[in-house]
Length: 189
Image (cartoon, rainbow, N blue to C red; front, side, top):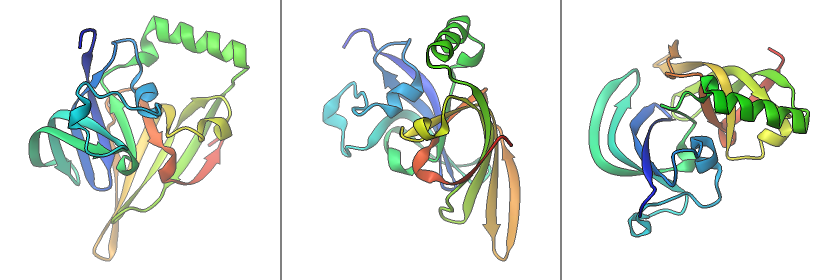
């Protein structure tokens, strides 16, 4: 199929990190829009094993703190297991994205708000995520993934009877946080 391209993406699940590429229909589509879509794009639909998954290519799987576990040529990852993702597209600084966001904010009267979120505990870990978003939290939380800019992500991990905390470098100024994994939030933090 012509017109398709690939995008680098990093997906975080409980205690694992998947880094690879995904197929996208066109370069201008945001990763957030792709993963929030009711029908995830598949270049070859015959490869699809699950209805709720995304196909990753040239995938490196790491566990707890960047210890490389394995490498796969292609791998399907269920969307319901993704806690958050980041991609290699730093749209926050892109002039067209800034213009798009300003126009949308003016049309909808969306205001900038800050939030601190605690995710559900999965395995032996949970996350505390802080960031900024535009619009109403209630509206954004109806989507599969919630957009946060300037995110600060901290993983809280149980090791035996102790708890450890570590900051996670998400690589750019944006993440998509799964609304299914939000346990609690505090606005204006």
